[in-house]
Image (cartoon, rainbow, N blue to C red):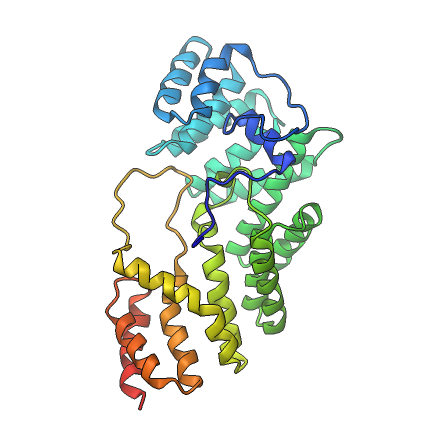
Length: 342
């Protein structure tokens, strides 16, 4: 598998309840904690969500809200649909989720969705405040839905702290996430990135290795709850960051070993023309994928040079410089390095 499959469903009962309430997946994956019953009046719309018929769901909830303008749960579902459907309206999602929050303040699912809507509209201060409000609410007692929402809020809030370079807040939140879910590969990955940003090479190495260990043991039951642009290629990006750290320590052999499968993937993508040509509508929660792993050939070539395999390195540098993948600046550096290798 070349990247984490965003459609996989793994048994995390805490999140299954939250996903069920949002209508994102069928409830019968595992024996999860019992969720509160849905409003029967919303049954048809919820089924459209479960079937991922987003355009039909958008029309259904829009019509329902015209007839029932004060129905808070319908507002939350409508906001959710707008966030999930291709070409969805993030501003409209925010407006309806704000209305629902005013009508039923303290609803944990609504607060989480509202924070995601603020992220989608780039209102980071409001997203941060909403996540903080939900985290302060706490997981409650014997309330799996609220506990699931708070758990997700802690992680997403940590990512905003990372965006703000507030490493201390991010680490504290990630540590709480990992106490609840020690296999959370995404949290290990972000902790590794913090250690690298702080210049702690040994800790970063340890945490990236931990990430690789956990990647085969963890996947979210509902991947949309995480920033997909950062999540899609954790496996490949982890290998790249590990290799760069190994190179910095002078261990070119380990860097070569870690990067070999990633380079093979990049070659396949280049051959298939996998540059960004997809013009289909995106959902408001999607972003540009973090494809830094596409620079792997450059770092692999540097490892080969360090190991004395200069002929193979030159061939790879020439190949990478002609690809339409990776950073253009690094492709230019590859051309310069090619000329320097004797």
